[in-house]
Image (cartoon, rainbow, N blue to C red; front, side, top):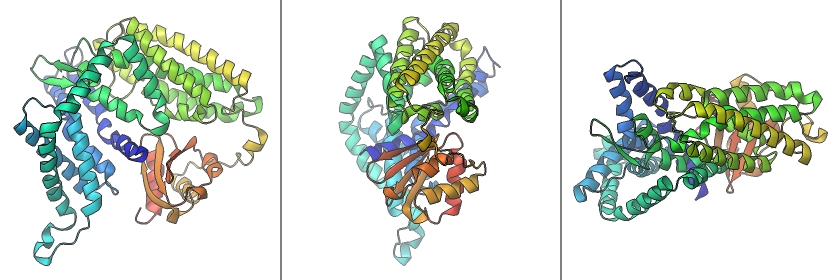
Length: 461
């Protein structure tokens, strides 16, 4: 079940990747920016069709080869599901859940039927052409069931959303804490999908009804942005300060080795809000620090809420999104003050815990643990991919290979064959074991290039 939920989380990255483009177009077209309505409408069109985009993206993510046939089937699945449900009960609005259900269904059907052989007189409809057909038929059945039964999960979701959105500091604090705490198992994407794309409703001046914290904030909802603002102080100041603390606590002879790495991932977090490279640098070496980090994220969310700060992002809470959405935020300058405060807290807490408890953060490993770490880390993706394949037990040991923002996601034949030390020496920042055969290898923001190089060197994976 955990592996299945992680596949959903990984697949959500495809549609989420469209958000920066949508947010950029939407903001640039607004009156306080370029005042070009058609650009604003272009960005809004992406956000208005999130169920369809989710259906396409998740189907691709579930398909073992990411095939276009799965994407087309996901789109058809969404159209059939939404139309069928509405025909039964016009009051039902499944939102992005229509895309999630249709995408999962289409992706699984694609894996099952993409190479099906039909009788000669029906051979034209065989193989990948059969997948949209079977998806349509299955989604008709699902739409019939959902048309009568979705009222119950919709009621539960609405009640949950109402509680979270109306619980003030408690709601944003719990969300911030869970958002960070679920990162190690990759399930933060699932809870983010609920908050970002489903919870809350707002009717725009044009009469369009939009859902989700991100869409409502970008469309001008005065009640949206509270569940996003508190991330800016953590991602722009808190985690970079944690990097500074780890550098300050590193052994003198190791500072030069870890300084460049910590500096680059700190800058990445500050500018873009991509934090996993930092978090995985201490998540496994010092789990206590990660729990503290999750708690401090919750604190930042609560304080931002109490100070009546509303801000939002299209991708993540880095400087780029902070500046892009500055004019539509409420009290955004307070986030800079709060960020400096959180940065100081992160540095003091991290440095104190690392030094007092002798936590083995980067640059503080014992000598026996450092043996062999002087091996050069290859900057050539093909060379790194070759080493990774060998360290993962060889091509025959890898049943499937995929990736998300910063990590490789693998299903292995025998996980005992994995050489974690070699992976670490080639730049991996951590290895996560999921179930009996699944493994995540944290690579960083260059993961896509490593994964594609590995795929080129592997056959039929």
